[in-house]
Image (cartoon, one colour):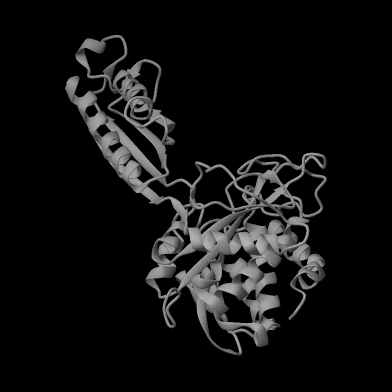
Length: 398
C-alpha cells in the first residue's frame, strides 16, 4: 500500500506553484478558457484524456483503476475568480489581472484537485472503479454546475458519489471541517422593481413616489426572518443594492431593490422567495403602486450525506497532522449543491487561515490569502477518501 501521506507531502512544491500560477492569472465566471487550458495541459501530462464542457470553460478527466469492480466517484473543484482588485503588493504571486482576483480560494481548489489527479493516476493498481475529476466554472455566479450536469458529467458511467472541498480562512491550516447535513446555505438573488409615477420633487402629491414605498419594503422584508422564521433555523434576507432617481429634485418612476436570500432547508428557501414577492406586492398595492419581483441565479443548500461525511472523517483521522473539527453551518452558498442533490456526497472545509502569519482576511476580501501548508493536507484527505469510496462504496463508511 502506498504511503499517501508522504506522496502528498512530496507534491508540496508543485501544489504551491500551481496555486500561485492560477492566483496570478485569474479569470471571471464564464471566461475560464486559459484556466482550462492550464488544467487540461496538466491532466494530459499525467496520461489522462481531458474532455471540455460548458463552451470550453469546464474540463473533466477520468482516472480508471486497475483493480476489478469498484465504484464511480466525482471529485469537483471550482475554478473561477472574482471581480475584485487585490491588495497586498508584497505578495510575489499577486494577481496580474486588474480588477480580477482569486479571493475565495478557487486557485487552491484547482491545485489540490490536480494533486489528487496526479496521485491517483500513479496509484491505479490500488484503485478500483473510476474517479472523475471535474473542474467547474462559474461557481461565483451559481451558473457552472448545472450546465456540466446537463452535458452528462454524471453519466457514462453513472457517478455514484461526489466529493469536494472548500478552503476556509476562518479555521486554521491543519484543520479539516466535516459535518453531516447542511454546511452551506442556499443562495439566491432577487430583484424588486417598485413602479410609481414620477414628478417634481417639490410637488409630491402630484406623483406616486416609489422611494418611500421601497424603503418600507426593505424594512418589511426583515420581518420574514424575525417574525416568520423559527429562531432555531438560521436564514438571511439582505437587500444589498438600491437604485432609483436621477436628480435631487425629481421623483423617479421606479426604484429597484436587489438582494440575496440564504436558508439551510429547501422549505425555508422556497417560502422566503415566495414571501418576498408577496410582501413587496402587498406594500406597493397599499399605496396604489406596483411591485415586480424577479428571481435571479441561485442554488439549494449544500448538504452532505452522513455516510459520505463519515468516510471523509475516517480519511482525516488517518492523515497525520490533520485535525478533525465539526464546523458550524455557514450562510454562504455554493452550486456544488446540484451535484450533491443527485448522488450522496460530502463537501468539507480545508482550514487555510494563519493568524500569526497575518493570514486572516475573510473570503471575498481584497487581502484574502491562505496558508499554503493546507494544500498537501487537502490532497491526502481527498485521495484517502477516493480510494476507499471507489473500493467499498458507501459500505466503507459503515
